[in-house]
Image (cartoon, rainbow, N blue to C red; front, side, top):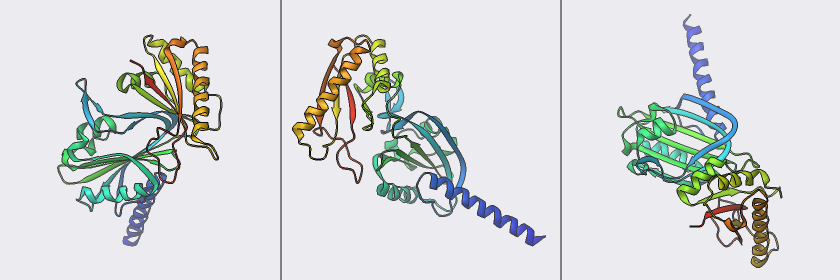
Length: 296
């Protein structure tokens, strides 16, 4: 009987280990030694996901992240317990080292600089078990070299000194770019600009432009400048890139006018590679993208 129990326990331990490895493998991160899975979930519907790129601050007396973006994609999240660890820095450094090799780290914070631990635990991730003293929290988010995957890691230590972490990935299909009318409107009101990545494999952006047109129709006073950014094509000069991106911006402007937007509310420019954003490792230049800028 003892041998049977021993064998059953060994099988359970093996199974738990396999589940931990599988969940982290899905997130493209190696497992932390001795880690245990608390909860895991996957949402396979391609819908809009919020990407937190800033600390939590009070905006108009409402606690919100300083900077967010939206991406259409699937989501996978897993919460872990570290039974043999009492050092938040060790756990955070373990995952950051991996992320720095495979992603471009877009934002990170630690301790009280991250803001309310209660908000992270209960509002952002809906995992109360993550809540603890704010000085013992870490957050980091990176985007893969291929730009099709966001990886976010939040590590917190409870008052009992137990350490938990929540790792979340958002996988973005290559052609699933853009956002909803509501998201575009919210971002333009909050930050005064919105960026859409454009698929290079397509010349027809009607499905991406429709939410922009709808947003402008719902906000009749808004005027926008359309700016196209792109990296240099092979053999292309900067002047040729400016001409090409300017032509594309004018084409997009014409499409929005055809969709019912008054021409006086739209201006369009192309800046080629002259206004780069942070580039992911191993990539040269920035992605083809449309930036919407609010004209005051």
